[in-house]
Image (cartoon, rainbow, N blue to C red):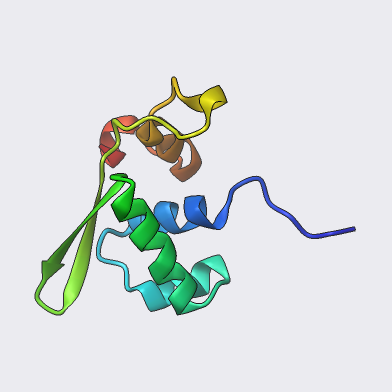
Length: 97
């Protein structure tokens, strides 16, 4: 039987930076089980799509979720990304906003 999960690597990376906005991509990659380069590409995708904002704070990045944006698939377009992250992270929606 093949190994698979319900969430994509994009969702896993996003969850990591929602939980720790100052996370290093090296640590994110290790948690998700991908390469650091793959984590960088995923963060770049999320920034380009507007879901994440990346700000430089000294030598580190700080990530901020734009929680109000809808999920991308037409079946889920009525759900905001912040709602999904709140459920998966097990926190209140205003915590991820």
